[in-house]
Image 1 (cartoon, helix red, strand yellow):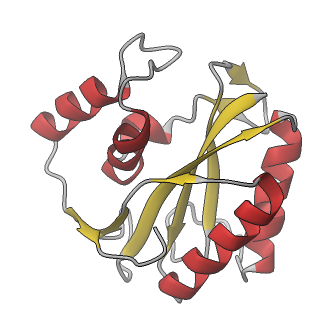
Image 2: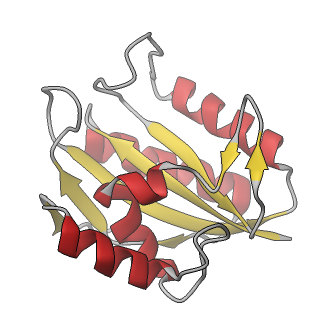
Length: 164
């Protein structure tokens, strides 16, 4: 059974969509381990602030099955896919890690590149998987976050959230 990590983000009806997404994920995968909830400015476009967190769960489903399920949950939450990579979204669910698997296909790249690119992914991942090692970087997530936060200005804050 693989230990999976997914990032969750929303800047449209964000509280409602995060709560609903967590319920859908729990219904599908059982117990979740959730990071704190973070609020961060939109990146790459002008838009409302996002709520972001990372959730972990164990699954026997394949990488493709999980990816397809995440896309379905996004669609069920009103996600509109367009040509613009950076835009507002009701829900964004990305499979970050599937155990220590390294996957490079047209549909999926693991570990997900966003881990090393964005504070709103790396900080919550480091919070719940700090001692785990990145399968490519051969460094744990706590150290990666420490290096990242020293070198990049991060504009995000933890948000008290009763369900996490």
